Length: 290
Image (cartoon, rainbow, N blue to C red; front, side, top):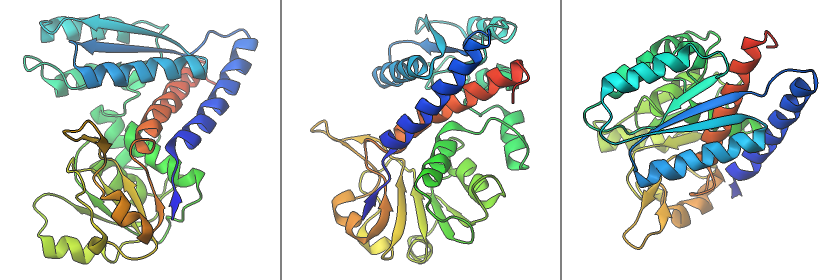
């Protein structure tokens, strides 16, 4: 069993980004700039935002955090996004999810300029990504691809099963791994909560790569996978005792795996690294450096 260490991979990517930024700054250009919008005081969101801001600094980026009260209206938030869209000093913008119930998250995502949509969720970017065109790719799925590349895990021609069809992970990673990107050309089966158990087991037991993102602790058990499988665990679940665990019963399943991601320390760090990659790309596009 080998660990797909997201921290090690992310640190390597961030170091490479910082070197590129230093060269641009030495050439007289400004630093890349990310703006993060946080609504309310949701504890996990605070943690995620802190990680993004810290990683911006490590990447050589400028960043700013705009805090808005829980009571902010959708109209006020959309007006702020419109201002940021017109601000040439900001390369990428993130609105941290989830949002309060009075705000429609999809309308907010749609309001972000596709050129600054470093999360990769705007319909324009998602559509371009699905068509195999140049686009900002959804960060978690993109981070998974970068992790597989870093450890040189074979993907082309492999059978990959994705469990969970969210717009954040399941749908985009199934598209990326089946498309002819810098990593891809896999045969991908996308399963979900309505997939009958018998069919799910039939697929996962034959899979070379299993990616799970369902938010259920210990969902993937040893009987579901074959020996030598590569297992990507996107789940982040906090148990009653405070321990963070994934969607995989790690201790029981790991001995069957050739590669497996830990939780924490796996995909989460790669999501943030992918945001930095997208921000650098947005910046380079602004200066016609890409």
